[in-house]
Length: 171
Image (cartoon, rainbow, N blue to C red; front, side, top):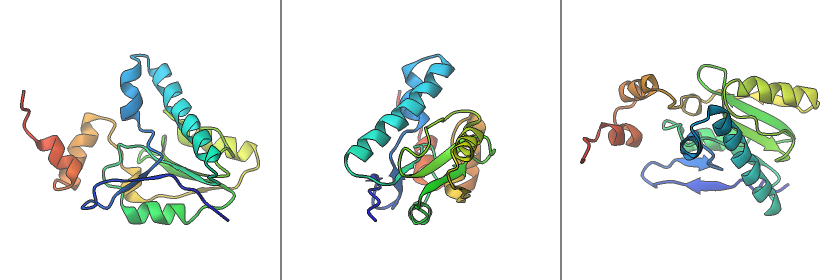
């Protein structure tokens, strides 16, 4: 069985892999309207899923770009769970979805935003789709608030994202 996971490998020194990047960072500036932002996030995820399917992907793994502590091992372990159904990685508060592994890629729809964990879970249940929850720590921690940035600076002050955030402004 071919699992055409679309991957983007980032700096080799970090050895980080993010799969089908659809993070809020890309959509947040598109509209000042939060409802439009959430629609856009899910729309982009759906659009990229359709593209992956057109290239022959049988599995898609969607993850945001605001997970600075994710590791290659976490992504590989999550990808290894690919089988018919859905694997959801919740955000650290349990309300959002920080990764969504789907086989086949369109087995459920993308429903990102507040309450997305429940939305993805309920959708899978309603469709009779097998659903699992995975909790890799690096993938669960995301940067959504100034408090999250402060936590990152305490938890991993030497990671690349923290170093960037600590750089003095040049303006």
